[in-house]
Length: 117
Image 1: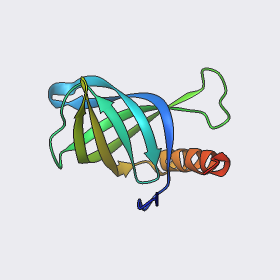
Image 2: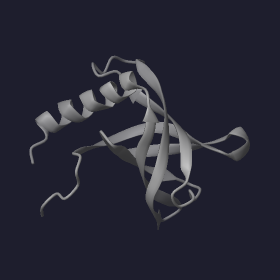
Image 3: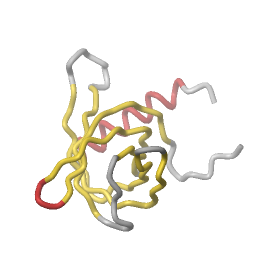
Image 4: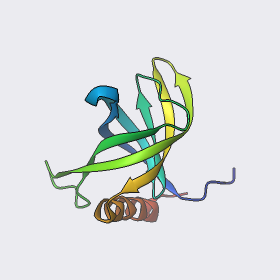
């Protein structure tokens, strides 16, 4: 099977939260991530083409114990599919600090380097 996506992605099991109206944060789980976006599991539906604020817990690239970065970003939903009790939601980054983008790029680059595809 040929990969048609523009950006390579890596599988992860990271935690995070999505902010809904009235500062309500809902826990999410990040399934995979790329330089341009991510796939998450959320118990609530996100509006099509809606912009959302996310908070991600991204491990230190050296995998040091208890070394996590809080990455704040703004995303827009690209697609959503109900899968069991959660929605599998694809989003692309709209706004993310350059230092946090560099951290994600480092993870994608590192894991892609060792991926036996």
